[in-house]
Each structure stands twice: as structure tokens, then as C-alpha cells.
Amino acid sequence: MIPEKGKLIEVLKEVVYFPKGDNIINLKMVDDIELGENLIRFRLLFEKVDDEKNQFLIDTATQMLKNAFGDIEIDIVAASQENSLSKVNHIIGIASGKGGVGKSTVAVNLAIGLALHGMKVGLLDADIFGPSMPKMFNMEEARPYAENIDGRDLIIPIEQYGLKLLSIGFFVESDQAVLWRGAMASNALKQLIADAHWGDLDYFVLDMPPGTSDIHLTLVQTLGITGAVVVSTPQQVALADARKGIDMFTNEKVNVPVLGLVENMAWFTPAELPENKYYLFGKEGCKRLAEEMNVPLLGQIPIVQSICEGGDNGKPVALDENSIVGKAFQDLAKAVVEATERRNSEKPATEAVKMQH
Image (cartoon, rainbow, N blue to C red; front, side):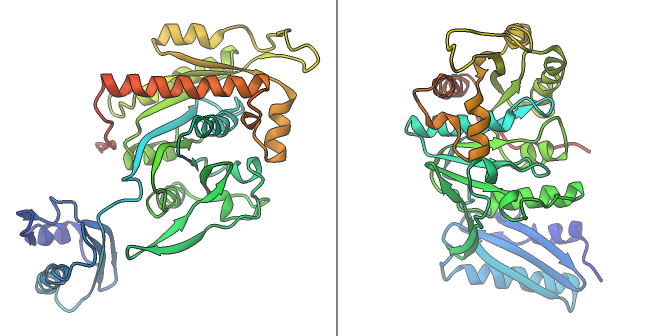
């Protein structure tokens, strides 16, 4: 017999944590519920995981569950209430309405730009089906490991160029396709977020998948995203999709503030003619869209050969602070910081979305 989750919750609502004067469900102390054949397993979250008094609450919950469900295995693990993102100040989602506009390139170089401004930065490759971070950071052979921290086995992010990095690409072979159903992909992403030791971060940058998908819903339901940055090129077909990307975040069900737009591939500048600008995909399309949608234009990033070379060589172009594109990403990082500060002064903190079915 597999226990019913609804009945489990009702029983646990009768378990009172007296120091806080409420039940363990209302106090959000129950996490990671797993129900199997004659099995109930979950984590009970405490402020002090090594407090001797915790065992009394575990014993009480165990006895009440046995009374309700009979002869069944009960496995309750004491864990720290502090979640892995409790020391993260700002979570920034980098999104695009369609693929091929350079979203991952912008995410990587923005993260480096923030780090060069003295920020502590984490970067999560949330593009589960098309992970590119291992290649872009020349870390294709890197494999994260787990470490026991405060009673929890946590993934230790890879560190490169002053950033903390995690990607599903670190857990699969570089030439192996990720063929997962939506639920499996969402669960893998949740693990990279909740079961990793991110530590103190000023900015946690999410490289989201292109378009709109289950993964986007998982992110907004799992995290209180401070704000989103939408990347597009100036051409009309990309701008049409960027509108949908903006609408996804500003939709009343999601309600994540859009910090602004980034126009990538704004113009082409040959290395030998740095003053020349050739508008290959149209001129200032994102600027007009930003005005129309009433969101800031955070930056315009030109096309130069070094961007492609940097991504392929594992040395992102923002590391060259004196190059045209390096300076553009420095300016973008500054604009994102200013937009975040403005958003924080005008709006309350974003809460994780509770979707209505």
C-alpha cells in the first residue's frame, strides 16, 4: 500500500512544534516527501540540526504516523532549515523568446561582468536540454562532487573565472543528448538549485532555456526571481518572440519584474575597422520594443569575431575588459545592477509562484 499524501499532511498538521507554537506543516518544516510501498520518508527542517530536543519531535511524528497508517516504515531525517539559496541576495533570469539570439553568451558574459565589478556570482545553466556552460568555460571534463554540510550531502559548484557554476552538462558526456521527459528535467533542475552549496552570493544568474516551457514554470515556482533580462536580436522575427518572453514574466500568474531588454548582435564591427557599424539584422529594433513595452534597454552588444572565438575557446570575451565587447558587457553589468537596485526600491521581493490548477 502506498500512503495517500493528503492523509499524511492532515496527520502532520496535528504535530505541534512547541517552541514556535504551530504545527510542522504551517511552519514549513516538512520537505522532500517520498511515498512508496509501505514507506513514508521526508526531511524535518530545524534551525539547529544537532539540537538534542529534535528527536522528541521526530519520535512524536513517527508515532502519530504509525497510529494513522499502521505497520509501515517511517523514515524522518533531521535537516537544516537554512536552504541552499538563503545567502543569495538577487536571482536574475536570462531569457529569450527564441533560440539562436545569443542568450547563453549574454548570460555567461554578464555573470563575468558582475564578478569583475566585485560581486560574488553564481551561474546556473538551466537550459537542461541544451547545456553550453561546460564548453564556454573550457570545463568539459569537470565533474562536481558532493560534500556533507550540516547533515546534508550538497553538490559543490565548479569554480572558474571567479564564478560558481553548475550545469547538467557536467553530469553527462559532452556528445550525449539529454533525452528526458519534462518532469525528469524539472526534478534534475531542482536538485541543481536546492541540493547545491551556493553559499554567499550577490547575484545568482540563471541561463534559462529559450522560449517558454515546463522548465520556466519550474524556475518561477521554485525561486523568487528578483528580475528577468530578455535577450533578442534587432530582427522582427526575434522581436515578436521577445514580446512573448516579456509577457511570460509580466503575466499576472507569474509576475516577475522585467529588468530590461538586451539587444544582442546589434551591429557588426570588423576588428580592423572598429569605428564602423554594419546593421546586419536591422537597426535599434530592441530599442523600439523597449519603448513600446515600457521596459529599459539595458545594453546593445555588437557582433565581433572574438565573441564566437571566446565561447569556443572557453575564455568568455568579457574577460578582455579593454575590447569593444568586453566594455559593452561591463556596461551591461552596471546597468543590470542599477536596474536591480531600482526594482528593489520600487517593488516588494518576488515570491515563488503558486500555480492554480
